[in-house]
Length: 325
Figure 1 (cartoon, one colour):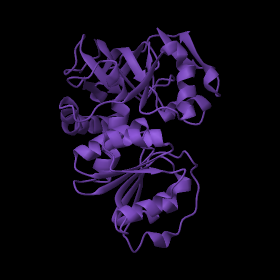
Figure 2 (tube, helix red, strand yellow; figure 1 turned 90 degrees about the horizontal axis):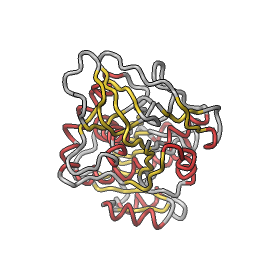
Figure 3 (spheres, one colour; figure 1 turned 135 degrees about the vertical axis):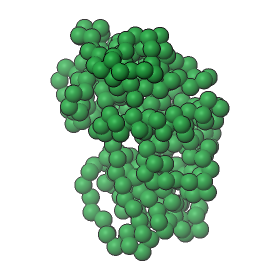
Figure 4 (cartoon, helix red, strand yellow; figure 1 turned 180 degrees about the vertical axis):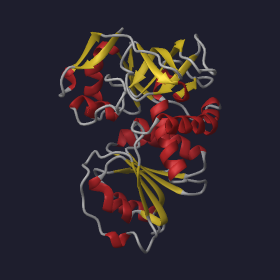
């Protein structure tokens, strides 16, 4: 099969389409012929050499895909050859075929094109596991999403609104903020021209928000704490500004704040299967009902993975970028 190989750590140009061995299908796994895969920020970090795949995972990038089941291993009962599916991967999506544990596979939601479903698994599992399973966002609460126009952000806006939260977002242009508003965001903040702490306080009568989903990391940590309500929960899922900072610990005490961090790729197969099961039960019905949809910005042929990475790193996109083998 053909796959995108990271020939050496570096810029987008190190991504090369090469002929490689087909993946082995182990017990409890299915083999998927890939219809599409979607980019995630982690793919760019892996390309640079700073986010290696977990032990035993495919060396090729790609954390989610959609496609058709072409083989099943022993002890797989739910899936059969010919099923159209999407899947959460530990790697290997940038290829014509990928093997994945059966518990990380999902049916294509009704009304969603097979290709577009490639943009669902990673964002949906990330947002559901952090915002809802860990941070327990509930109806009537307020929720701040940094990077509202990203793949994570565009999904988080929709599912949080569907579950009854008031949604705040930050983004870096008026066009991106308008897109977020169109998806349902209630308060849209341009982080380049406004201080988000001040705006959050204004919009909440000085209280702050209940939950924050943050992909920025170090540079925002103290300001995020300053933006939280009593019993507020901050969940950090990215470190785009770095991993090391200093905070005032006494900011946590009066408001009983919780700071959490979570990654998805590093979880074991059992944990991922549990999350995927929760997603199918809690999110798939909202997608089937048309209340939540994948936001696809642009598709590239797999051979143009370098161009797709350049687009992602330009930050000019809104939603997901797909690669088509």
